[in-house]
Structure formats: C-alpha cells, structure tokens
Image (cartoon, rainbow, N blue to C red):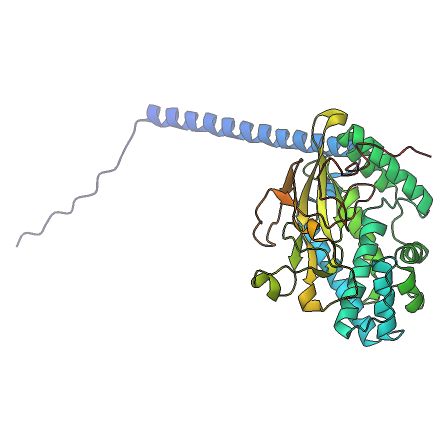
Length: 396
C-alpha cells in the first residue's frame, strides 16, 4: 500500500542583501515619521502660545473665552445659563404667590404699576396665575434694563452709567476696540452683586413692588436672583465671543403689544393665533437676547442685530385681559427694513419669514428692544436715531 508523500510548504526566502535593504528603508521611514510628529507637536505648542498671547491682548485668557465644555460664548453657554436663570425666576414668583408678603391683589397692582407707568390699576382684580406672570415680567424688565443692558463695573450706579456711555462712544468708532475695552474693564469689575447693589437696582426698576415685598431681596433656593443675573451679564459682556467685536443686549416685549414670532416664543398654546386672529402679549416671563455687531464701514457703518434667544412670552388669551391700553392698529403692520437683521434660533423652533420686524419694543440708549418704539434696525423718516452709536450722547 502506497502512502502519499508529505510535502513541506514552500517558504518565501529573500537574499540577505534584499533583507538589509528593506530594513534600512524601514528605519529611515520610521525616523522620518517621528521627525514629522515632533514638528507637528512643536507647531501645536506654538499655535497654543500665540492663542494665549492673543487672548491676553484682547483682555482675557483662553479659559475665560470658552466655557467648561470648550464651547464659545456664542453657543450653548448662553442658552444654558439663560435657562437656569429662567428657572430661578419662575421658582421665586411661584413661592411669592404661595406665601405672599402682601395681598395678591396688591402685588399684582404694584407690579402692573411698575411695568406700565401712569396706569391706574386700582380696580384690577388679578388671579394668582396673572400675579405670578406679572411678577416674572417685572423681574425680567429689572434684569434686562438694570443689569444686562447696563455695564455694572463698580458698586456706584453713577459710575456705571458713565462707563456705559464710554463704551457707547467707543463702539461707535471701533467695535473691536470696544470689545477689548469691555473685557479688560470687566476683568476688574466687582465680583458679585452685593445686597446693597441689588436693593438699589430693585428700588430703581420696580419701586412699587419692592414696597409690597417689604424690601426683601428676591431669592430662589437660598440664592439671590440678581446675583445670578449679574453672573449671566458678566458672562455675556466680560467673555470673548467667536465674532470678536459683538456684544449682547436684552429686550422685553411690552404688555399688549402684538405677537411677532421673530423675537418672541410662546410658552403656552395660543388659541387665537391658531384661528388666525390677532393676539397680543400678556406678559414676558424671560427677556430675549440680541447680539449687536457693526458693519466694517467705520463710523458710517450700521448696526447688525442677531436674535440669539427669543423672549419667552405668554399670550393675552392664555393669561387673561389686563387693564392696559391697546396699541393703535397702525402698529400691527411691521415696517419695512432698511437695515439687515439676522436670526439665530438654534433649537428654539423654525425661523419665521424674513423681511419684517415688529414695532413693539422700547428704544433705550443702545436702541435695543423692550417696549413700544420703532422696530429693531428700522431707520425710517420719522424714527428717532437708531441708537447712541450714530449720535453719541455727550459725556458729562
């Protein structure tokens, strides 16, 4: 019987010269790759060093210009901080309604008197829900006008007003210089909003309501709301942004003003709007934010305003009627734009049709919305100067 003969598999064999040649080339390639890796690491160190130098020249460190997650001040940090502050205001208003220091009717009338100057609300009978929303509206206006729209650098309100004017004049001439000045100034600002500063702001913005609150500081969870609002303001004004020369301002739509989706977001369902009927603002429970930039045409450039976060609003039909005079019907039609307006809604819903801007906002020293005045960026023949940057207020 014949057995199959076992055959060994053939092996790939190279000569010694070929092996040494391949080994030499591999060693040279490995050294070249290592050299390139070291060069890339050195480049990264140089780039990081240059970024730190640029951050120092711009008035802050890289850690100040970015949040803990590495995101710039223009993205999630604003929305997250605003949401936290919104929760604090909601909790404070709910606690105040549940344990009122004064009768609820007195609180509602005082809040309405502070919100609408000269309004006779003596016969207004508010429900607890209306009282809570009015408290949130009053607090939103206080935070907007008293903290975010005012550069709080010192514990002196007069000095803060002068510093705000200085920033206004600098921004009118060079937004980049204003951005550097703002960050450097906030690096030496007061660290916290002291109780004395908080009381001064509160009595200036809502004196009637503070009288019925017995002069108590608004707190939520044992912490001051205005202190959190000041920290939010410092994050907006004192930190760097991706656009460099931009700064932020807050706006509060006025009660009984028309609803316009470009700058507001309803927190409750509006039945009138779903039926195609005209509805109005019942109360603003948290202010909106706009980012102000300037065209690169020197002092003749115009301001560009981007809605970063729309104001949180409850409509009039969901809240119930208030004794506030309705605006003239002529203001229900948005005016045509003469200035570019951008929108950045993020995850807050689809962007409405562009091309028009409402007229339901206050005109303050910066031309930032808040009450009844010409629309954002609207420069019409009968409108006042858009903001302090086109015609700066003389320093005194």
